[in-house]
Each structure stands twice: as C-alpha cells, then as structure tokens.
Length: 282
Image (tube, rainbow, N blue to C red; front, side):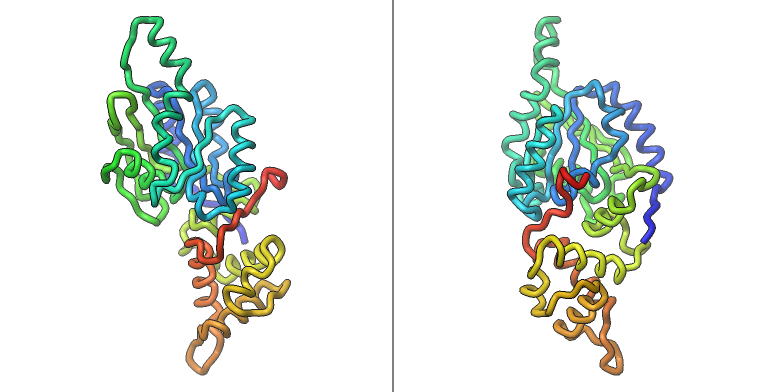
C-alpha cells in the first residue's frame, strides 16, 4: 500500500506556521500516544528550534500505559516537557497550565528582568490532522472555542484564544509532511484514522493491522472475535466476517465490512490498549 497525501491547504499552513513562530514563546505539539513518532511532523523541530517545547501524548488512554511512560521518558531526554493526555475525557488537562509556566520559566524570567510583568505566554498548538487539537483546546479553555470533528482537516485558519491572563493559544490547521519517506509511517497513520479512509484500500489496511496484532499482541483477536489467529491477514478478516456474521447476498463473507469493523474497534479502544511503535523501532 502506497501513501502520499499533501493537500494544498497544508502547504499554506506550513508557510503560515513559519510566520507565526515569530509571535510565540512555546510550541505545544499534540501527538497520538499510540504512534508518538509517526504522528509528529518532522518539519516542526526545525521550525520551532528556538522555542520552548511541550509534547502532549494525547489519546494516552488508548495506548499501553507502560509504553506511555517509555515514550514520556524518551521525549524528556530530548529536552521536551511532556504530559500524558486524554483530551476527550479531560485526563491530564489540570496539569497543563503549570507545565506551560515551567516550560517558559526562562522567558518569564527574562521579561521580569526587563521590567515586563504579566505578559501572557503565547503558545502555538500544532499537530497532524485528527490528533485531537481542537478537543484539547476546548477542554483547556473549558468552552467550545475551536471546531472539533473526527475527520482530518476540520481546522482551516488560525485563531487566537485567550485562556486567562497567563496564557494565550494560537490554533493552527494540522499539517502533514509532503511525502512519507517510510511507508510504515503512512500505514500507522492510516490505522489510527489520520488519513482519510476514502483514499485507502480498507481490506488491505485491516489485513496489515491483524498481522501487527498477531505478532505484537497475540490473542487480542482471538479473545475479541473468537477466531483462530493466522499469519495470513486476509484469512483473519474472513474469520472475523464469519464470527460477526458479515455477509453479502448469497451468504458470501463480507470481508470489507469485517475490515471496517476491525478498524473501528481498534480506533475506539475496543481491542484494549495498544501502542503501535516503540522508540527502538524508530
């Protein structure tokens, strides 16, 4: 399966982000805790190299807790502040304000020495599509001030949001890189739903996912769907179709319906807490 996806509005978003970097003190980057490296934009390290950095491991409730700790340690070692987050349910939100102040303490101290008091920290919130930026901003602000949606590309323009006298947020559209150097990155992003399903072969995608699960999380499929796990991804789909009575006319197995069911179950945490990558395999 080959992934290459870079809509025009994302090129514009990157240009806009370069301009906006001059206005801010802190980059708050949301990543998906199930794929912390694959869901990062490689351009950001260059774009934000002179800024304080905070990484939010969002959807951490869907990822394996042990691996959340491994990833948090990995990013802290590289000099980032890190918070494990579940923006949808508000987990980790209360700690964010304190972490922002801590991440920007050098800037606040510089301001104080210059006699600039009480200037709010200006933070840019960034992340690839569908990683939960708008949900996070709404949870942090305590009101629906950013549009949310579970389809990639809902946020189209920039907007400033004043949280309180200490923090102002700049919301930006999610941007993805021009091409996937590594097709595994594309595959992982497709699994979590960051690439529009309409442009993908759902059965191929789901078959690949069963292969990963059989290797890394044996018995998950067996327990969920009451099937015998196979090394053949398409055989797993046929088994799931049979187990879940996914049929088309003439009692043929509907493997496409089974594929959609599996992807939906995975994305919504119904297969349990699963992390798709480790620091070692990146």
